[in-house]
Image (cartoon, rainbow, N blue to C red):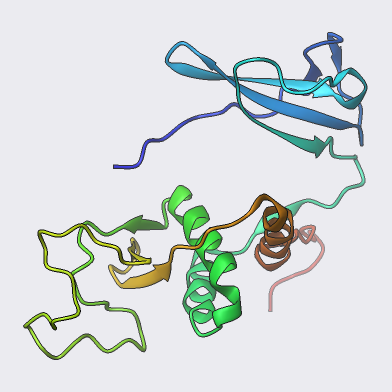
Length: 196
């Protein structure tokens, strides 16, 4: 069972200088352990001296500006379809793995309990034999399978996603690639347009 951790939203306040963060200002967020919970603190770039002792994780971000366009996530069915399509592109293994983790966090996917079940992904033919082949691990041996089987919660279909190791150097580029794929600017609602 995957654990779930809740981290609060940006405080919009510099913890060190005790002042509000300004529009467009760069800041750092840190997550600290606080008993059985986690605590978030935000620091302006001018007050940042590195992560405080006991930091679990930290990242750099920018306060939004009033004129910034709001980005919205693509609809769930589009994200699932994108994940399936990426399976056809070997150069997208790492991006696909990160996308699958993100979709699990958004509760659109969940890991399957057994890797022995046949895949019900569209375009994947389940094995016609009920007997395991000699090169498959037996059920009492630990699995060294580089794939994880995930289930689409909406329709119950499953797919295999290759587990990928991602270096720190790759992480930023992959994050930007995912953001470009998954988010688009929200269109303002026009009150003066009548539906046809």
